[in-house]
Amino acid sequence: MAEYQTHAYDVLVIGAGGSGLRTAIEASAAGARVGVITKSLLGKAHTVMAEGGVAAALGNVDERDNWRVHFSDTMRGGQYINNWRMAELHAKEAPDRVRELEAWGAVFDRTKEGRILQRNFGGHRYPRLAHVGDRTGLEMIRTLQDHGIHQGMEVHMECTVLTLLMDGGRVAGAFGYDRERGHFLLFPAKAVVLATGGIGRAYRITSNSWEYTGDGHALAYHAGATLMDMEFVQFHPTGMVWPPSVQGILVTEGVRGEGGVLRNSHGRRFMFDDIPENYRNQTADNPEEGWRYTQGDKNARRPPELLTRDHVARCIVREIKEGRGSPHGGVYLDISWIKEKLPNSEEHIKRKLPSMYHQFKQLADIDITKEPMEIGPTTHYMMGGVRVDAETQMSSVPGLFAAGECAAGLHGANRLGGNSLSDLLVFGKRAGQYAACFAKENGDIAVDSVQVERAAREALLPFERGQKAGAEGAYQIQHDLQSMMQDLVGIVRKESEMKQALEGIQKLRERASRAGVNGNREFNNGWHTAMDLPNLLSVSEAITRAALEREESRGAHFRDDWPEKNPEYGKFNILVRQGRDGGMQITREPLAEMPHELKQVIEEMK
Image: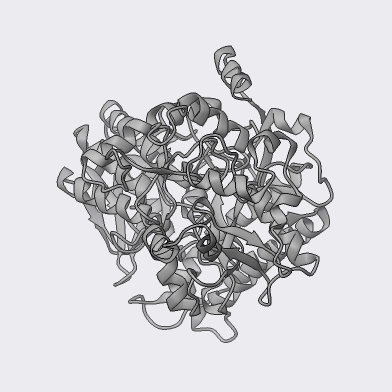
């Protein structure tokens, strides 16, 4: 029988990024005993990499902004397959959550009048992103940690969760291990909140940190929860492409929000070539008007560089494929050109984009105040995730909640920049509130020792296999999966390639079942990688099967063999469940009818 330490809670939060911390704060405030598990160290969550800002209709820079405009922008960006109730709650509650963060000590950039400053961002009609230079996520995490640590929560750092435990049809906690020493850990809990982030490490080129291996998605799926919108993977238009060691690292949309422009190898601003019809009346048709927009001119229209991320990413890919790319396989993003407009442009760029200045100076030896950056698309965000109730954030499994990037619904087919950070705050609060309520109302749980022993036994199998000749290491399997997903289920997809990917995933799953690990359980990265593989394979299969089912192009999902949008596919979401035979089951769920008053809001905003 495996030895393990036990830590029991009312509410167990898996993940210590923005959504996890906001969940823990709210659950603790409601009187619940809260435990927080983080795969890395407290303060190292991927939220710290969020740079541009948090989207909320405060109306500080342009008084015309309000929740109705924000709701309409979010729905349009998501191609109208969003969960409309989540979009409504998000737009209405985001301003209060940002002001709450400010009251807890967040130091935002300010207008001349002393109010929170807001900047332009892709897909947002008005300047809406409250920011701290280009380090907004870092400030959010600092503030949430400083506030949350006084609420009485217990934090377990450098822990990996292997499985969720069940008591009948209800969640009963989690089982995992301490990454530093290899000790098994048992977490009985009356309610569990998944706040594990995204799936970026299923791809070769990604802005995501090493933790993003689809843990929450896979844990929920294997516990019987439903996943939704898994075909929608957002590829951020601007990631570093050179040098190879930093390929994929994010270049914030704030560069374009401050006036940065995209050029091909001929020096041409190619984004003017392809402006979608539904954005034409909001998009500048000349550079001068676009510049005035980034400087706060309310009568100007936004530059085409600030169109939605899916569109900008595809335009960049087109330039590269047609031979107009930069030497290292990207295009150029140029903020240095503003010296023509601003006499103090160097100081302006360093003040507005300090992280970007130091990132390029230190990693690529490029001074962005004097020369353009080489950038290209990078796997960035997962719109799909655990299907949750809009009001409570509970999944289809009683007692299992999800918030942030691992929950689906708010963003639909494509997320607008900055909406992720307000998503964390709005739905992290709701998840914590209702998880604490569920724990209080539904009494004690029973932990099944058989489930625990099975999980422990399976976790140790790689060590047994590692003692046999010919056992393959987990690193190569992960690398092969990332390359395959990048090449066959990436920005541009087609049926034949995705079917090839499904065959490849099955072969990789067989290889993973034979993967071996040498050494002991302490500090063993090979073991950690072997434990990540099942999750990566599950989410990769879910993405591929859902993408095959959606025979159209919509938002972040682009089919080369179905390049047009099909109105019929705009009437449902695609769901992924585990079938009774253990296989992956794909179904369609009709969209819920939107209330008349919200339909009117969208029509008015058009």
